Length: 237
Image (cartoon, rainbow, N blue to C red; front, side):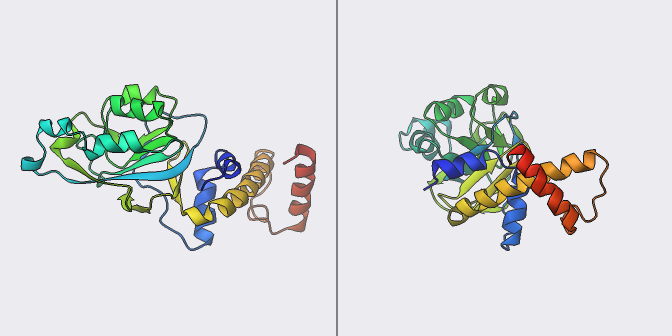
């Protein structure tokens, strides 16, 4: 389970810091490639993954009438994604058709989801961007999902933007994109990245003041470590 404390920490750290912390642990492929915010938000998206897998649509299986089926997986995913979770959709990086639109995503937001991610398209992107809930996609796409995608499986391991996503993995999105944190690493990554963010703020302040980068980033000179310790004491960081 994602604790409130860890969620709060991850809301304040960058995907860049998370990527570095995961790289130190041998995890190189945790960034969802090719997705961007539908509209930038001031606060990070953070939540456990709830997944939806699409396969290529076959014409005899995907007439418009399939939406009349109350068990249609796309609709069921929207209605069963737990509050506080992120709906992550595997659209096979094919943005020629949408994987959802503003009506479904609005319903998802009103049910309390923490966000939505797809490596394919979304339709009615302007409306989705106006929601408070963060959303990430490859690009705007008007055609209905049925033209290219068949929603098939819910809450199973998927690929999204070339990253493996398992149900319960912790998704963190900022203005750069989305990282996938294996659930068992979430607490320690949150703690480590909180410290990284503090140090990088100090480094940026030093660089803006004219400091050279060698010996500062990474910190290999004792004098810079002393300056950082003094900075932390002064700023409460």
